[in-house]
Amino acid sequence: MARRLVNKEMHEYVSKSTVQKKQMQKFLRLVEDTPSEY
Image (cartoon, rainbow, N blue to C red):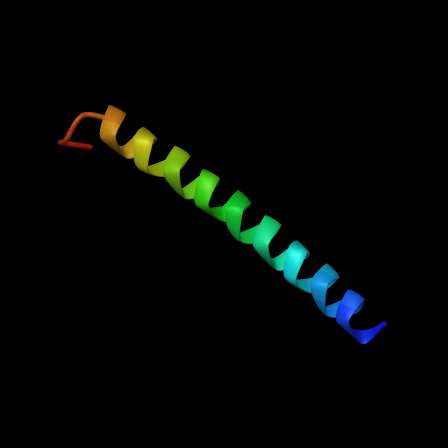
């Protein structure tokens, strides 16, 4: 039971971190697309 709970929390943590990575990549892409004087 405890192991299942830990797995669930780990899964939520991993999915959150992957979402954050995607947002970070999106942000970096925006920064690359904008002119350098911005």
